[in-house]
Amino acid sequence: MRVLVVEDEAALRETLAQQLKDSGFTVDLAADGEEGLYCGREYALDLAIIDLGLPKLPGLELIRKLRAESKTFPILILTARDRWQDKVEGLQAGADDYVAKPFHFEELLARAQALLRRSGGWAQPVLRCGPVALDPRTQDVTVNDKRVELTSFEYRILEYLIHRAGEVISKAELTDRLYAQDFDRDSNTIEVFIGRLRRKLDPDETIKPIETLRGRGYRFALQRE
Image 1 (tube, one colour):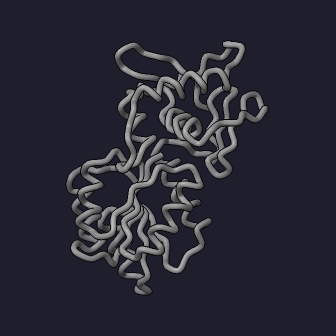
Image 2: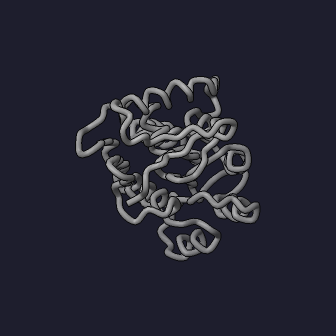
Image 3: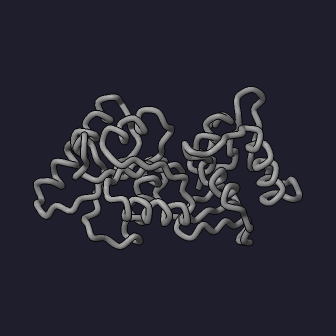
């Protein structure tokens, strides 16, 4: 899943980025509201984490602009402000939740995962499709209750496919979720990762979890539970 962090405090921004990467996210960074607006407009995001006290363009105004442009990805506010009115204003501007500074990363991660789960229409924390189960909290993947070892990129692709189970996902869309803006992109690697996932999830080719739709992309074909 791809997340944008808009935070002007450099140390916090870099620390948060590394923690999110370690938790399986693809991360884009912005140091001010104007850069955050550009990223929100240009990148295929699943979630944005936005500080309210931003230079150039305040966080509230950034949120309002993104929502006015019909950007529907969940937004999680970071705020060091004590006034409850500021939190209410953030939610009214279009944010979905907030975390007050200072915060524990575990709380932020739990709130982020809950927002992603709800945006994908999932009610339970563990995502289950047929015999395949994925737990975003631990990054554990099992098939028929047997753990499957995945690389970081394999996990990211599978997580996105399961979040959107039943939908056709283009190779370009998967590439956007796999790489941040500062990476060299090669969409051919998607085919390699899909092939690896099929062999790991379905070595006997009995459940056929991932369909290829020629010229359109891929679909996680197992039924949600």
